[in-house]
Length: 282
Image (cartoon, rainbow, N blue to C red; front, side, top):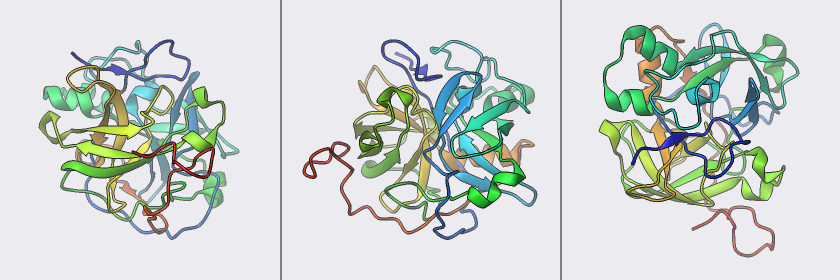
């Protein structure tokens, strides 16, 4: 059974997610703390998603989320080669930014423009970049909240039972950041290398779409995109970031790389309400 897209935190019932990959490590940017960072909320035409990584090329700085967050179809539209997307230049509200960003790249729009026919790419290449307003750049931090990183970019995929780390920001949690950090395990790599099924506690929910996933070394692994029903119920699909960035660079998109963050710290427990058992842990 196929998965469906998580377009907004307002989706009723079980929302459904999708995913992608990037080419090579980006430049390091230290551990500066800023309000515009991985894990913040991003609103596009009323749909709420979560930012993954900060990206940079020679001309601009970007913040990433899932391409389906700028989609115009329904929550069950899964094929980026057929599903509609808002045009480049669409304003995007970014939590922590004083000025709106502008949609600068959509893997969905790009695949349609180049006539992509690879079914795995169509279903799992799910990356969009939003160009930040230059007036907001002093408030940018590349570091993933709670966990730190990314320390590098994972270029080899994730094996079965690889530990993974994430930070979601769905508005369904009503601002309860205690449930935002997550850790879990990868079930390996599927979809021709385009996606990694993962189990986390708690699983990603509508509004977490687009959020970053790190591997057990703190390397950027992917972007939260899908929630599977079969054969792995309630597993999230994490699109491979190395592959998605490589596709972007090879098909006329920004020549941007992921900016590395502060030190990766996997030894701490996910935040919890009691100071004891981590609510986000396995």
